[in-house]
Amino acid sequence: MLKFYFDWICQPSRALYILLKLNNVPFEPIVVNLRDNEHEEESFKEINRFQKLPCLVDDGFHLAESVAIMR
Image 1 (cartoon, rainbow, N blue to C red):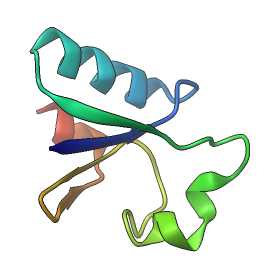
Image 2: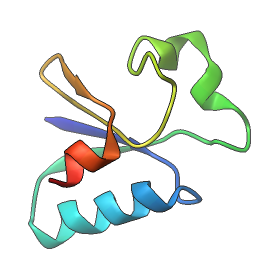
Image 3: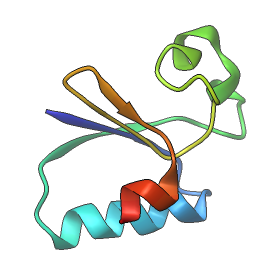
Image 4: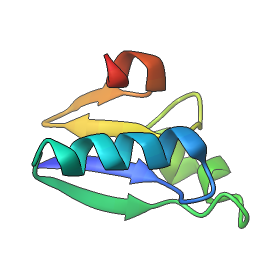
């Protein structure tokens, strides 16, 4: 299943969340709290080496550029 890493305070994350919902894309939402610097933890660095949000992971394929995701 598609994993969607995001935080509500991040505008690109909110836009992608709406896009996924409107298109009925099944996904597992995973909140990464930016205020607590969870995006800077080593465990998240394995998911997104740039340590930015939003990020999609689908069966080992990682996509972290919000512009590319929206297209």
